[in-house]
Length: 278
Image 1 (cartoon, rainbow, N blue to C red):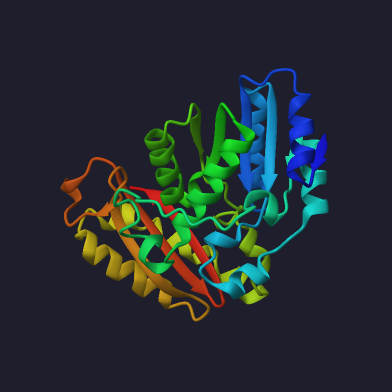
Image 2: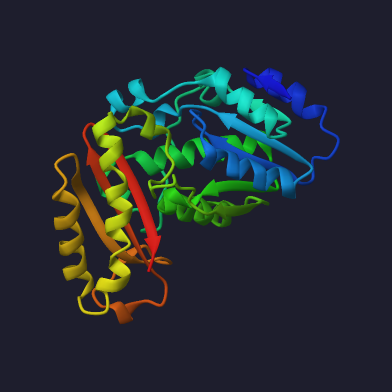
């Protein structure tokens, strides 16, 4: 496995790959866990070569404190990736990704009107900036993304089609801890009490599948919010029940055949997101 810490090093390593027609790519921000490794394993099983990027992208953080405290564990990450059969780890400098300020502003086609969009202004624009830049550098045939960031996956798929990238986005299932908590690099920032409370989020939102039999979507949201907030360690930022294709909230269960619930909950100051299909 080659670790390329500059664009020049990556270009040299990429040039030595024997089969460039079916390269698999897993973009990450590091602090890797089993969720990331599951994406890597999908790529290694499907593609001749697998490239993983580790880059904490400054343009997608609308909170500077969040950027400053985001966990960085490059050495441990590389050890995990070598065991997983990765060919190249691309861990670039900011100047390699943004030699000049990236001033591109993207029209999300309305996919950012709800969910994370209004709560994290500029976040998805930063995501599209870095992902398109990485796609231009890596030129993958397949790119693997976890569905924990359901809205992000939908937006990336939209831009792959809109901008004509010759690659396939492969969504991968959420990987959870034994107690149901969605795997996340931010979980390492939780206190012991918060970590004990955090699985309450998933356990609660799963109740929506039963509540929908007797409650409207709005009533279901109110009840789930009440139950999550009953835990003193947790505070709901939002719960929305949406059509999973348009990413817009539904008023009635009959409004969509592909319903999804997504949410963000604070175990302050850590912000946890999750989603489930209904």
